[in-house]
Length: 172
Image (cartoon, rainbow, N blue to C red; front, side, top):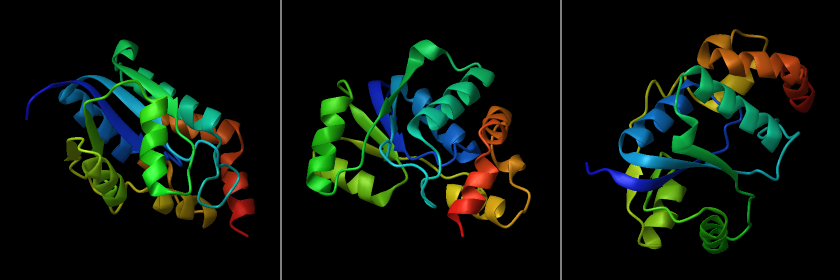
């Protein structure tokens, strides 16, 4: 696979976990600079989206810093939800500076950007049954161990913001 100058990887990161970290590292192997699109940036305090955009940005930034991933090689850009899929890609292109390729595992994201004539690359999944945010939120909700699924800085942030309690309240 050739190396791209600029790439985009979009996720909700609710919360940021080792699968996301793997995907970012993978995308950076094939690009000089990565825009990390923070999807559903306008949503929080919901069962599916418990964390705010600011909390998720802090999770990502802290995890990438702990991994010594050069901060000059990536930028996080909040991307709000838009009801019409056709408009969503336009909003992404309006918010994110020029990018050449889209990395994703989400079939809809891959399809929408492919229809916009962008090269799309599906990121190989690493232990998808374990590294899925829904599973992590469910584990928190059920009082099961979850900390082994996310980077250490993410655990610290979730605990500092009482994220476990928030998820339990939202799950009722």
